Every structure is written in structure tokens, then in C-alpha cells.
Image (tube, rainbow, N blue to C red):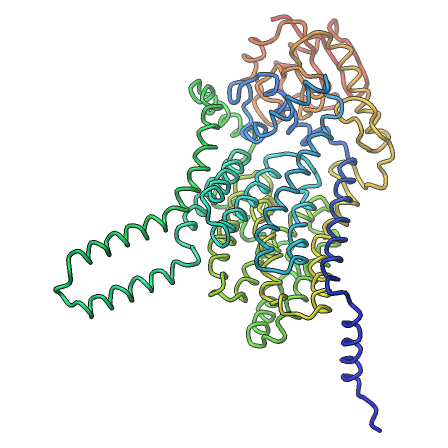
Length: 610
């Protein structure tokens, strides 16, 4: 008797394995993966103390929660994102009675935003993919921590609300055309613009697509043309005028139906815009915006064509997986997938695993803090590649126009508008496209037709993307080092409950105690330079028109505000060891006779009289 060959034995083994797999094994595996991601990401919130950027995001929110006015009391252009968290911050101060633990609280708020964004991804994905794949796609927002800072900021909120609005809008276009769904998409994109105003450009692109990228437009247009031709043939030139009126009425109704999604989307967008305009009106009327633009020009470079070129070229070459072979590899993969449909799922699985493995490790061109950002960039660009393999008659065209293109525009806009070099900030705008790639890849691979074993393997492949990002998140923090070295827990102050290096945790506690002890009943505080953390030690207003007293700026122009708002009862927190950036301010504040506390790395002075 002939012994079975290798291929026959492998086939037999696969059949036996599949028979032993539960009919819902892929869903069970997906549930376990998502649960691991959610629990581990929530655990990660407890690690890393940052006195700079994260404190900056919270300090602007605090000043507005205490009653300061946008663009009158704050000149930093990145301030509007803080308006979104003011109600929560204000409520926290009322309930908690102080700022102890407020940094962790804002991290929890961001975690909830991540979960909400993941839910919008899932709601859209579940209609076109098996639930197991939809769950894995929805887990990507939970692990997205730009720069290793898991909190509410203009970057994170801009990325999340733009992605949430995009998937809510896509769900309205494909599955749920009710008015409130389009309006909800407009509201979410309006919030994205509040968080990151330059996102207005891709939001308008998306708005246009709600009209021109509807899935049934082509079919409707063909039906209308065929109907008109048939009518002309049957009735000739002497057709009934009443029939012509009926056709006109039908055309008007069809036109209103086609434009309805656009206007409903714009309604939600306009509602957020009007609310924002009301909040910013005092600053607009009193030239606060012009002051903010002046301050911005002091601290960052003017955006030029060179900046645009830098964003594009760095995205296409610098740090790309495979370097110069990036496009060649994708080209070969695309040809194979297009010509050999039976091999497509293997090609796509290989590309996904290639990206996941590449961003599993810290690349030489950047640090671990931006791994998830670069993953978003290249996964977002890959979404376009995946969509080319999706049947355009079944939604691929709409996903390309209304899903991928606005996100690519957002990536360019966010990369161009920032002072960060290269394309790094583009990962925030491209995050919606990265989530779309998690749907487009299994859609192109036609996973719904796979066997149960194939689905399990497919879930394992797609899980590699969020799990690789999670592994980086669990290893590193922003400015606090490796998670494994963060062995001390802060016991008091705004960073209460967060683990950090022993020296950093001690510094956070000393800073809080000294500020509170010297502040007394004062209502104002000054902190310089580039060090906003002390503002969070106690809920008082900053004495300068910015919580980030930028060492690059001509701070002398801010002194009239300081003169007008100080009473002589407040304090000035001075970070030692820095160069002299504003001699006139230092001459006013740093008087030996007013020194209240010298902790070595900082000094606290009694505020000079007005």
C-alpha cells in the first residue's frame, strides 16, 4: 500500500485540527486578546511621571477650570484641546477638594476616549467582517499612546476624535443613514478640530466625501440616465408635460436625498463650531489670537515648503520598514495578490506580520516613545494598498475616498503644522487610516470565507499589530525610563498613585509640599522656564499669560500681564541650573530677601509687589 505523501499528511493533519476546534474558537481567542490589551493598557496608566509636556496639557485645563479666559489669559496656540477636559477637571476639583491624583485622573479620561473610539471602529467593522476580526481591529485605539504619554492632549484627542468621526461617518454612509448618525459624525469631527484646529482641512475633505463618495451614487446616476433615455424613446418629443413635472419632482427628491448626509454632517460640525466661537469670542474681540500668533512665532519656525517636503520624504523613506526596499516589496506583494487570488491571504498575512515584527523592536532612527506613532504612519499608508485589493463594487471605492484619503490629508496636515521634525506627528492624522487597515486587510483576504482554522490563524496574524504596540507600551515611558525601573509610588500631589524612579517620585513629593507650604492663600503663581508641573501642585492661576514660559520666547512681552495680575502674595517657582533667558524678569523676581525655599534644583520666592 502506498504511503501518503507529505502534502497529504499535512492536509489530513489540518482537517483533524479543524475538527477539534470549536465553532467559536476565533471569537474566544479574540476576546482573550482584547481583554489582555484592555487590562494591560489600564495597568500601564500607573507608570511614568513627566514634569513637562504632560503637566502642560493639564495646567492649561486647570487655569480654565479656575476661570481664566482662552486667548486672554493664555497665549499658547495649543490651548483649545484643554477646553474639552475642563468640565471633568472642574468636577474633579470640586469632588476631590484639590489636585491630588489629577494626573492619573486625566489618564483615565483618555483611556475612556480610547475605548469609545474603539467602539466606533467595532460598530463599523462588525458589519463587514467576522466579529473576531472586528474586535481585534477595535483594540488598536486602546494601545495608541503617542510619544508614550497616555493622557488627554491636542495630539491624542485630535487623533481619537478624528478617527471616531470617520468611522461614525462611514457607518452612516454604509449601514445607518439615519440623520443622527451623520450629525454624530459631524460632532466628533468638530471636537477633533477643537483639539487640533488644523484638522479642519481634512474634516472638510471628509464632508465633501459624504456627498461625492456615497456607495449608491453610481448606481443611482445610471438608473436615472437609463430611465430618462427610456422615457424619451417611449414618448418621443411630445411627452406629457405632467409626466415631465413628475420627473422633475423625482429629480428634486433624489437631489435632496443625495445632499442630506452632507447637511446633517455639517449640522453637527457647525454646532461644535458655534460653541467654540462663543468660548473664544472674548479673546477674538480683544486681539488675544494675534498675541498668541506672535508668541507662537517666537517659539517655533515658520512652516514653509521645506517643511512640507520634509514631512513627505521622511514618511516615504526615513525609518520605513525595509528602507529603500519598502515600495519594491509592496509592489511585488501587490502583483502577486492581484494576479493570484488564492495566494492573497498569505501575501496579506505576510505584510501584516512584517509591519508588526518591525515595530516590535525599537528602531535606530527613533525611540520607543514614538513606535506607535510610526506604526500608525506605515499601517495607515498600507491601508491604501489593502483597499486596492477590496472589491470596489462592494464598498472599496467609498472606503478609499471617504476613509483613507481624508486620513492621509490629516496625516500631512498634522505633520506639517507641528514643530516636530519629519513626519512623526503625521501618525496622529493617519491613525484613522491605520484602524481602517485593520479592517481592509482581512476584508481583502476574504476572511469570512475561511475555514474555522483559517479564521483562528487570521485572528492571530491581525492580533500581532496591537500586541506588538502593547509590548512597547509596557516597556517604556516618556522621560521616566523603562517601566521595570519605576519602583517608587508617589504618595501626594498631582502625581499621586503613579509609579516612577525613586528620585523622580521624591522630587514630585518635595515639589508639592514646598509649593503648598509657601503658597498659603495666594491666588497666583509664576513658574519658569519650560517647567509647568508646579502649577498642578495647588489649584491657583498662573501669573503669566502662558503656563509654558518658553525659554525660546521674548518673555519680556509677557511682563505687562505679570505686572497687572500680581498682588505680592503669590510665589515664583524658579528652576535652577538654567541659563538666563529673560534678565528683566529674573531681576524682578529673584531677590535674595524674598527667597522662601531653596531645594537645590529649584527655588521658591515670594512674589514681588505690584
